[in-house]
Length: 328
Image (tube, rainbow, N blue to C red; front, top):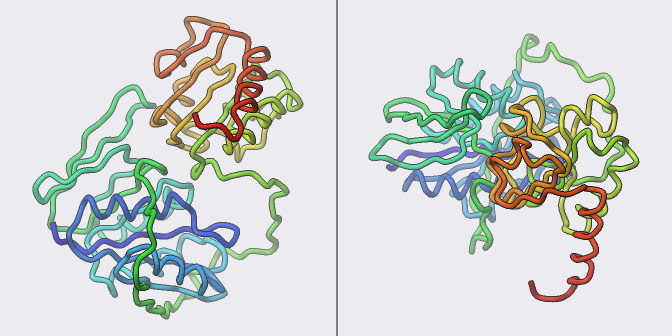
């Protein structure tokens, strides 16, 4: 297939999100045509230069104060401008809260085919076949998107590896001038309150250590943070743990929180509600620690340990500490 692909690049805290760069690998599997990228924001010249060294064929930049913070209407206009400039017929995004909002609006405005939160994508002739979880992860659905019209895909982060080697030469960077109407700017930011957390974003984490209501308190989550920091990962939580006030909502894994697909997911004291399983079953390796041998989490686990998390997690942390600096 020789379609031109356009990758929507997200950035956070002055850095390009790794999950966005993973879309470049997916694009290479789907097309032999040109691969373009679009990045949107304010004062993002250095980020555009980084993207230009990833191996894409062109970078389109919308850099203006009106785009400093995500708003669906301005961003829709910006991506549409990039689609028209690139002549793209395939749009790729990482599955994030932003793409969940942006992709459907783009699809509606461009009369495009769309598949979201894809686990796998592959080329079958000129059609793109995708696999995604359905009915709260009770089953997997296979969807075929034939050629002939614009196709929009969002793919779970870490489903594909990010490029490892920089390009020999940077791709050309093209600034785009996007005009917004008053109606496009009906959302106004009065104040931005930064998070006081310095934690890795769940969608981009290769390792996630998650806890459920069995942790019993916010203080007890410290043992999960110890292990996550030791492994270089992030901490997640179930909806029950978030509702109980043990962790902030930004740490929630599940259908109503973050949908993740890390290399390693360690579930501590999590029984495995359907909504939680839907948000993490795409993980490459799942380790479950639970005192209930019949807990549903063991049905999706790669490895299971019927044990008390308060005994097992510190032991794992000690074992990891003893291996520091040693080959595994």
